[in-house]
Image (tube, rainbow, N blue to C red; front, side, top):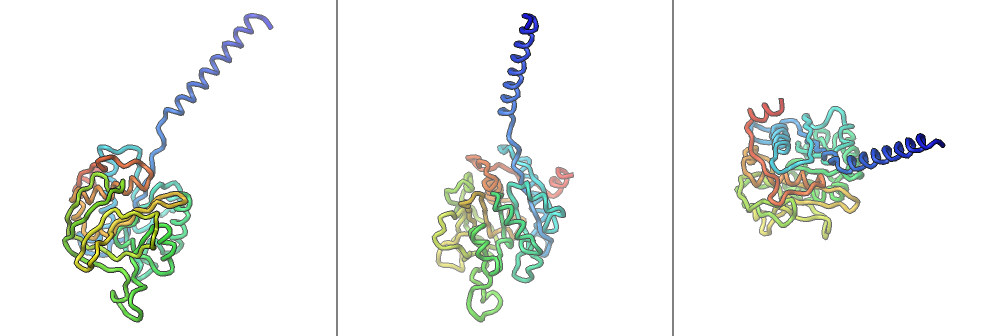
Length: 296
C-alpha cells in the first residue's frame, strides 16, 4: 500500500469515527418525544354551565399548552365522545375521558359503547395512563372488576339495597354542596392548598379493600356521611401505567378556582409519567374567546 493512500485511508477512518461520535452525542442530547395526552369530551347533555365536556377539554388543552412551568407535553382534543380514528389512542401516553356515564344507557357511555372499553384496556395494558372525571367514574357491574383493576375505584349504582330502585339502589352517593376539599401528600397534590368550592360530588366510591396501589388525593367531609370521603384518587398499576379519578366536575365555573385547575393539570402530568412541578402546574383561566382564539 502506498504511503499516501495509507494516510488517506487512516484519515478517512478517523473522520468516519468522529462523525459517528458526533451523531451519537447529538442523539443523546436530543430531547425525548413529548408525552401525548388525548382529551376526549362527551356530548352535551345538561344546561349551560353544567357538564361542559367539550368546553372543559378545550380549556385543558389551552392551559396545558400554555403552562409556564411545563414542557414535554403534547395535547389533542376529540369531541362527540370518541375519536373518529381510534388509532390515535395507540400512541397516547394518557387518555382523559369526560362524558356522560352508563347508568341510563350503556351505549351512550363512551367508555363502554361498542368495543371502546376493549380498546381502552388495550392501551392500559401497554402502560397508557387513564384519567376519568365526574360522570365518567360510573361503571356497570359487568365492568366493575376491570374498572377496579385499571382505575382503582368507581361510582357503583347497582349493588346497594337489594330490590330498591333509583338512587336507593346505589352503593355510591351524590351530594351538591359547598365543600372544603383537603389535599393529601401525593405528587398530584403538589402546590394545592385546601380549597372550598360549590360542587356536585360523588362519594362512597367503590374501592377495592386494602388496595396498596391506590392513594387518596383529595378528601372531603360531606353532609351525607359521617366519615371523610375520598373524592379524588391515584392508582399506580403494578404492571405499569397510572390512573386518576375525580368525582367533581359538574360546574364549569369551578375551573376559575386555581386549586381545582391545578388538580386536573397535575393529574394529567403525573399519569403521563412526567414529574409534577414542585409548586404544581401553573395555569390561568381563559375565557371562551381566548380559548377559541388560541385553538383556531
